[in-house]
Length: 152
Image 1 (cartoon, helix red, strand yellow):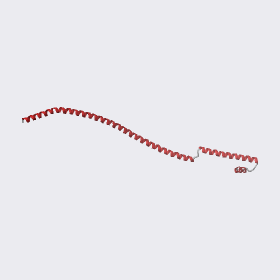
Image 2 (spheres, helix red, strand yellow; image 1 turned 180 degrees about the horizontal axis):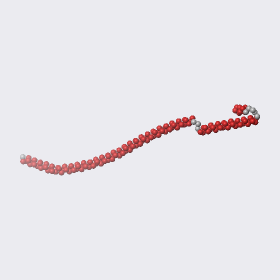
Image 3 (cartoon, one colour; image 1 turned 60 degrees about the vertical axis):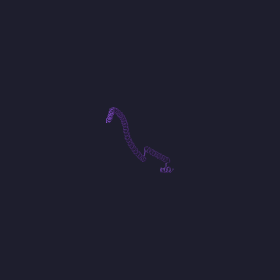
Image 4 (cartoon, helix red, strand yellow; image 1 turned 60 degrees about the horizontal axis):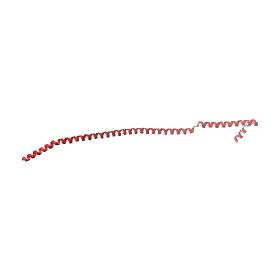
């Protein structure tokens, strides 16, 4: 038994020695693990910062796209109103042109007046000639000359 107790004492001493050495080894491993965790946390924080910056850029692009959509919709509405106004004015101009075809223009009235004036002057000239012929011939019937000229 003595042998056994010596062995047991030796084993206990070895365990105690191992335990005294192990906490230092454990502390080194724990410190290394803490340093690694801190480095990983720092890298994670940097990655999160980069992702947040990317998201902020995407948010501003999305806002710009929404603004563009609103502007383009307003432009489309304005273009539609312009088209409707243009079509309305085109129909009104066409109606005015049709109405103007029924109305005598200034040039038309002038040309008609000139034609009528020419006819009146021609008739007056003929009447004067008839009167002159009547006076020259001494005929009592001026209508005969007028009838002859009308027949010609």
